[in-house]
Amino acid sequence: MRLVLAQIDPTVGDLEGNAARVIDAIGEARRLGADVVAFPELVLSGYPPEDLLLKDHFLRGCERALERVAASCHGLVAVVGVPLLDADGGVVNAAALLADGAVRAVYHKIRLPNYSVFDEERYFTPGRRVLVVQSPGTRLGVNVCEDIWLPDGPTEEAAIQGGADLIINISMSPYHMGKGEERETMLRTRAVDSGAFVAYVNGVGGQDELVFDGHSLMIAPDGEILARGPQFSEALLTIDLDLAAARIAPRKERAASLWGLEVVEVGVAETDAPSARPSRVAESSAAPSSGAPPAVVPLAMPLSPAECRPPLAPVAEVYAALCLGVRDYVDKNRFRRVVVGLSGGIDSALTVCIAVDALGAERVTGVTMPSRYSSSGTRSDARETAENLGIDFLELPIEAAFRAYLTTLEQEFAGCETDSTEENLQARIRGNLLMALSNKFGWLVLATGNKSEMAVGYATLYGDMAGGFAAIKDVPKTLVYELSAYRNLLGPGAGPIPETTITRLPSAELRPDQTDQDSLPPYDVLDAIIEAYVVRDESVPEIVARGLDLPTVERVVAMIDRNEYKRRQAAPGVRITPKAFGKDRRLPITNRYRG
Image 1 (cartoon, one colour):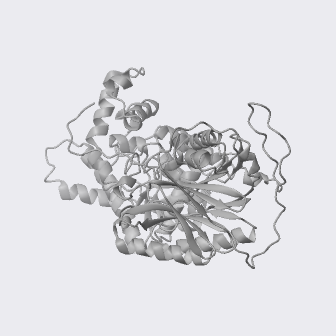
Image 2 (cartoon, one colour):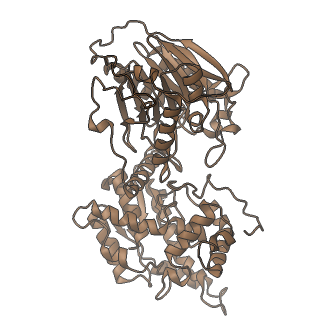
C-alpha cells in the first residue's frame, strides 16, 4: 500500500478554502500513486471551531464542503475530518471515508477530551462503533485523535477484534514543549500492543492561542518509526507499506469488546489517473524468531531522509512554534503589517526577531518611545536591533506627553508621594501611541510581555499590555534568554540582538536606577515558583518542600492570585507550555481561596 499523510494548515471557518486545499492535496496524492490519503481531524471546519458548532447553518456548510471533496475523490481512498450532524440530531467529530466520488463510511470519534484546552463534551456526541474498512488485500482501522491516546481503546479494538493491519489516526494535537516526544512514545506503544502499523497525521498551523506542530508519523508493528513529517510546516508524507508485516506481528490480548464493531467494504474503481506507480513491496520470506518482534519489511521505495526528519532541538522547536503562531495569527486575520514597541530590552528584541522571521522585515515596524528615564544604552540597542533586522524604525519621544499628563493631574495629586502611578502613565502613553499607529494604518500591535511578568502582574494595563497579539506571553523569562541566545546563533554575524541587551540587568526604566529585581525575586526563582503553582497546581507547602523560601513563595503566589483580573484583559498569545494563561487556565477573578 502507498499511503500519503496530508499534513496541512486549515483555517477555522474557511469551509470553501479548506475544501479546496483538501481537493488539491487529493489530486497530488493521486499523482504520487497513493492508495490512501489521510487528512487531519476536522480539517474541513478548522480546529477548534468552538461555538461555531452550535450553529446549524455552519454544520450544513461543513456537509456541503464534504460532498464537494467527495465528488473529487477518484482512484484512491481519502480519510477526511469533518463535524457532522448524526441521525439523532447530535454533532459528531467524524472521519469520513471517501472513494469513487462519494462518502462510503463515517467514523464517529469515541473518546472526547475535556481537559486542558479541550472541551469537546460541550459540542460532540461520542461514537459507539469502531470502524474497520475492508479494502482489496487489507483491513484498515480509522479513528480520531484522543481515541488513540489511552490503552485498550479503539486502536486495539480495530486491530485485535477487527483484524486491521493498519490504523489511521487523524489528529489536531496542539503543541507544547515536549509534546512531540510524548506522542512518539505513546504511538509506539499503541503499535506494539495492537500488532498493527499506526499512521498518525497531525495538522499544522496557528489558531488563536494554539499552535499545531505537524510531526506526523508512521510506526511499524514493532514500534520502529518508519517516517516522521516535518515540524511546523505543511507536507505530504508518502510511505510504502508491506502490510504482511502486521499479519505476523504479536498482538496484545484483549478483553471483551467495549464498543460495537462495524466492518465496511470500500473498493476503488479503475480511473484515468496516472497508473505508473513504484512497484509494490514483495512478500517477506523471513519468518520471525520465536517470541521476537518481526523484522521490519524493507520498503520498495526507500524513504528519503526528508521523510524521516529528526526532531528539532527543544529551544529551536519553541522558536519555530512562536514564529508559526505569529505568522498564522497575522495572516489568517488579514493584517498586512505588525508594529512592535522596541525598548532596548530583551523581551521586545526577541519579539521583533520572531515577527521578522515569521513575516519578513518588510512587514514589521519597530517604534522606540524614550522617556526621561531611558538610558543611552537601551536607546542605542533598540536602534541597533532594528538596523540589524532591516525593519522600518520610528522614534516617538514621550517626554512632552508625560509632562502634559503630570500637569493635568497636578492639582488632584497634590500632597501625594510619587509612586507606580507616574510609572504607569509612561507605559500607557506608549500604549496609546502604538494603538494610534494601529488605528491609522491597520497594523497589528504585538505586545512584548513574557509569562513571568504576566503571572505576577509586572505589567501595565492599557500600557505595555496593549496589543492585539502577545508573541511571548507563555514564555518564562529564563526561556526568553535561551531563545534570544539561540536566535543570535542563527545570524547574520553575531546575531540581531546586541550582547548588551542580553547581559544588562532587566529594567522597565520607569524611574531612576530601576531594575526588575527591585520588585521581583531573581527570575530563576520566580519561574520555578510559577512552574510549580501555575503549571503543576502545587500548593504553597508542596512548593516550599522543593527547597524554596517560604516568604518568597507566599509573596509570589499572592501576586499571581491577585493579578487574575489583569490577565483576563490581556491579548491572546502563543501557547508553548503545558498550561498557559488563557483558555488553558480558568480561575475566578473574585476568589478568596489561597493555597
